[in-house]
Amino acid sequence: MPGWFKKAWYGLASFLSFSSFLLIIVALAVPHWLSGKILCQTGVDLVNATDPELVKFIGDIYYGLFRGCKVRQCGLGGRRSQFTIFPNLVKELNTGLHVTILLLLFLALALALVSMGFAVLNMVQVPYRAVNGPGGICLWNVLAGGVVALAIASFMAAVRSHHLTERIANFQENLFQFVVVEERYEESFWICVASASAHAANLVVVAVSQIPLPEIKTKIKEATVTAEDILY
Image (tube, rainbow, N blue to C red; front, side, top):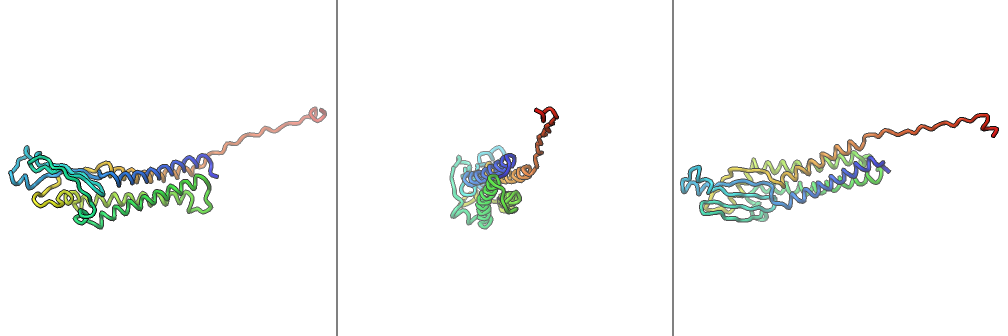
């Protein structure tokens, strides 16, 4: 059985892995990966709007990996509409990249549970195989954190290189053309960053758990026997 010091750190490691699992679920469920401002370029060109009038043509958009919402501002008031990525909108995007992001996050869910299982195993017993020990915990956390980081990088590539927001904003727009004027990452994106950070923190936790504690030695006082004690 591992000592109380290692049990405490392995318990923290399992908690961090489970927290990462929950964070990824929240990031998948909440449609706030990115938000932005979209300009109705068609409306601006029609009325030849100047800078003070551009505010009337700037709408809002936010979306996640499965759904989102858009508010169009084309000079006649805001029109709010909701959309889903699947099954039609995804065809207008980089389908392979978007599906890859989802697969990576689902894989990260499984890896987070595996890393938690290894931490619990080391908390209740000392594994016979080295691969199931602290090295195994580190391995699974590196894999899980790396997969989450790859999903984050893929989403950033979709936004920057493949103009994800602009494609979504102009989906099924026959009369109006929208231009993205502002983009910012929202809470679901940063939740994924926190998930990857939890696995990085686990590496530190496992390293700390291997620090040997100083042994407390009790000094045994030797009993002295005198001649009087023997006679007695």
